[in-house]
Amino acid sequence: MLVTYLHYSESVVSFSHNGCVLISGAKTEEEALRNRFGSDVIDQWLQIGTDDTSLNLSKLKRLEGGACEGMTFDFAEKYLQKLEEGVSPTEAITQVSGEYVSGATDKAQLAQIFYYALECDEIPIESIMESTLKLQPGRVTADQLAQHQAKNQAILAKFDELGKFPLLGARLAIGLRQSNIIAEQFGLTITFPEMYIHEKFDEECDSDFKKLLEGLDDGCYKGNFGNHKVGHAVLLIKVDGEYFLFDPTYATLKFDLDELATHLWKEAFKISDKEKPHAFNFEPCQVKED
Image (cartoon, rainbow, N blue to C red; front, side, top):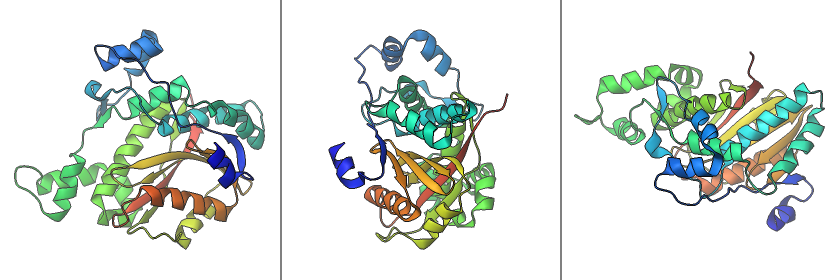
């Protein structure tokens, strides 16, 4: 928190700790989760999934590090609930921000765990990557690749540049499916994201990325940045042209446009493969209608 304060003292609304409660061992991961969170809670989470994106119980794993995905869902739920109660956006941000000083809530930790246990009925990502260079008999056929692209037609149609990066496109499509399933557990819906694709990462923030942020409507956005292997989740709230960023690693921060663009770009640059395509996407979050 000291480092965050030194870097962002004038921007901090409230600090955040991107951490979790370590869970003691058991015979199975599922048993360990039941011991920690209770069987009734785990039974409810075990019901999530769809026909083409289902839970793979072998992927259930206790958290040992951050829970940024889960924390952004948790923040979005509480923030939007405050708005429905008549609290002003800035006051709602202040009230919710203080809940993450000591780390992720239980619900946020579970969301993180089950997000990564969701498995899409897709061609494995590694195979998609190889197929862009050369179709390999016995592994990936032209028909399989065409079927994969058809499943993600919405993304490929809206963002022509993703046609150049099928591996990244696949990761984004899978992530959007996972997000929608987890969002339901928080009473939220996620709609199609605003997206920025960068083919090769330079240290200097791109002006088009800043334009994307500037063009966002006021609202609540679940943000992700990364490549097909590594990423980070944040929550961006735009209110009357002002930007509030909940970055679980640091704090809730109030930024102007230039500060926001610089922060996101630098954080993405830290984890990027500079020679690989990189994406920022901002998924609008809304309370799910009954």
